[in-house]
Image (cartoon, rainbow, N blue to C red; front, side, top):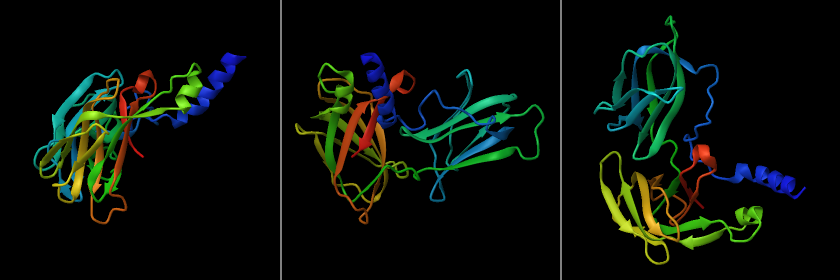
Length: 246
């Protein structure tokens, strides 16, 4: 009976456990996705401007890579000669994913098959802030005997000596800093724009994967303090580390 209660409680908690967006291997595809021609173009833009350096990868359902390339100065890359079948397209830059889309190439290409797939980067910005400053926290499970209690009653520990890199994907500008003993950090030199914040390493009693967060730096933002919480991913299929904004 006790096992049943714990199992039910854990099941009810699963929707609350963070899962890295677009990163779970259990993702499903509805009706084989959109139809695409064997030769097509993938383009990535930000506010109408092409973005170069985006990593584009096409895999089949067995996770075998059918194509791998990088967008050029026009923000596009040509995918050529894909055989008929079901595929997944992934596009990311600096650890921020802009596309995780299923599609298929038909044995007989129809008129509706796409010749071009265009994505907008920066629309999924996690945070908007007036200042790149805040605190880095490790959310650790509690240490009681009951696993359900441990999941609910987590302990927040400051992450010190973590390396933080703020990078503008448009201009390529990079700003670096390190969190202090209280987990606090600040980068005051960066001008307004959209950035990727990469957090790596740090000391809090356990190790973490490097994680990334898309941030808009704007004087019109409502917040000027970022409280970033790192915690383990959920389940074996998604795994990894998530970086959340509280």
